[in-house]
Length: 305
Image (cartoon, rainbow, N blue to C red; front, side, top):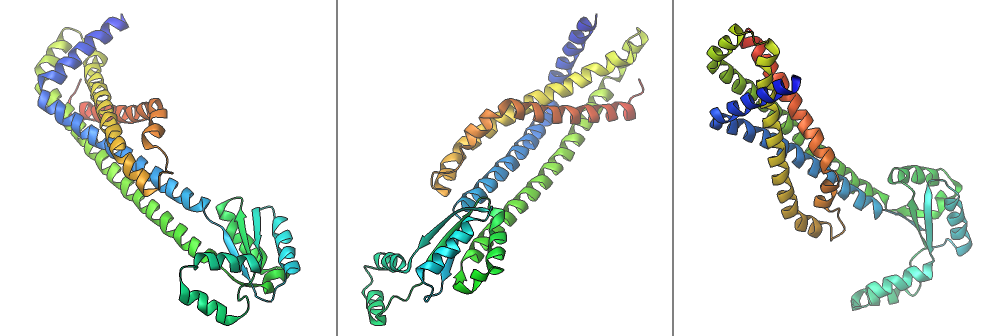
């Protein structure tokens, strides 16, 4: 019995969709824009996290030791750093190797090589390259070094530049996320208003039919059901269309993402393809709840059934 009732209500819902097709089309398009904007926010968030991880993976702290620090003292600091739980690796470049690397980098610059030769002695100190197990541990490592007896061996460290880069990327990512959330909430509000008005208009135009249905004994639930199903139809069509547009957009975007990240970035299409069932379910569920709320409010306020 319930199955027959459901199919009858579904038939009435389809009639409502096509009876005022232009209004239905506008409703679906607004929903498509809403879902598409949500997906754009997800892409921006994904790219922001990817950029941040890419920078963090390349981060290390270089500790430049004073010129007079000998090999034994440098290796003592290396051993001390390796014992810290937050340390992943510590590479030591002795003075002679630092000098050799500098000469290799500037071999084609006669003025630099001539100035180096004029000094007569190796002007460089040894360098320790420290990598932490997690990016958030770098500050802790730096604080630990500065509080240790080895702090007097260090002439300078270069983490500050990395900190600024990470901070800027984090700030941009947060701003994009906040802007995206704001835009999404705006479109959600517009969607609810559009659905509300769509259902209200259809209720208004069907008042005579609804009155007849009441006279012949139709229950309130049977009268409401076609409008609920109509909202679900809008949600299915909108999510399907929005995801189709989104994957086309992601496929077009991917070459630019590869260029920006030097080919090391995540594959946006593959990432969201793996999560397509969950993405569809969440977005359809969200739109379905939104349309059901708008439909319920419209019916309670404007129609006494």
